[in-house]
Length: 193
Image (cartoon, rainbow, N blue to C red; front, side):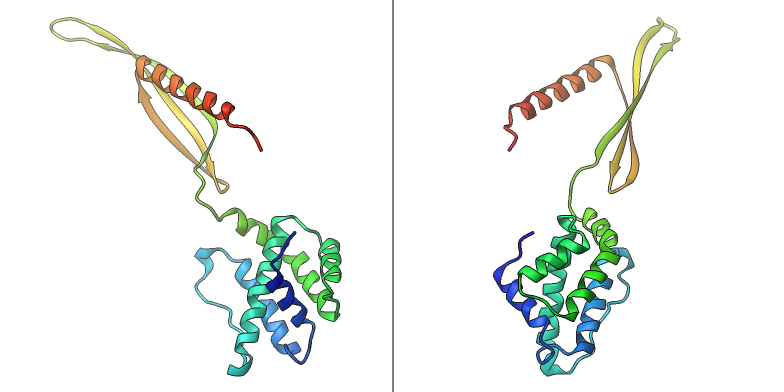
């Protein structure tokens, strides 16, 4: 887990009671947990820190720095003891370290769940169902038989299951299969780093 030098310097200011009072520290910590643990849909109200105008910048910086700390820790799946060790190595040792680690440990799963919702990844195909139907047309001139394939992809995006259904002919299905094989071949050529 790595944080910028600026964030690390600001985190050392958190331990100083003269810079950040205990009351504001608790409010900032609650605001960080509230804002990181909620879904964007649930964001009807914002949790705000009540402070006088001279301490507003300090509280704002503390909010940003603690948010970065918790997000990075959750991204790297850091446990409570490892976070405490990280803060101790960064010379952020105080009675507030215990509160930080305790709040992080209690809300780690919610933060990780919110981090999973971030991004613009395409849905993943997790299953495929198909069936073949034969169509017979009776008309005045002649009867024509044709095959139709009904395909259903089960996709998953952010733990939400959706279905993509389409119907195609044998030729269209063969073209789709060729394009999939071509994509797989291109992906296999890409070196894995």
